[in-house]
Image (cartoon, rainbow, N blue to C red; front, side):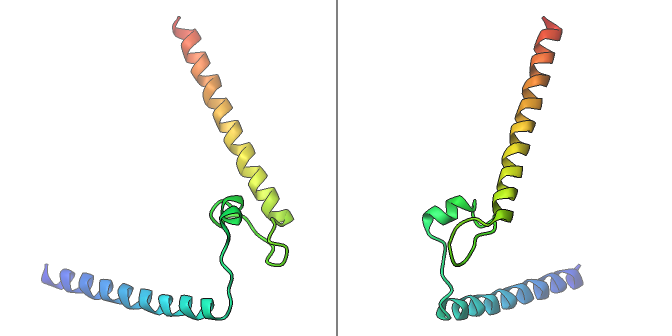
Length: 93
């Protein structure tokens, strides 16, 4: 049991050390002039999920397509759920 706890502790220490190096990389990127998303861009890209053109700061064709696919898939899922709910309600009445 002690052996497993030690391995777990060592693994946690490695994760913490790796996270610290990532923070250093983040600081370097911000110092190099990496621009952050504005509130509108953050909302438009849905927290950075959709591709944004760095020059125009608008969605690319790929980003627009991905966003539309997501919206249509959600609409289809909701409609299927409503159809099933209607079927169950009418079946038991």
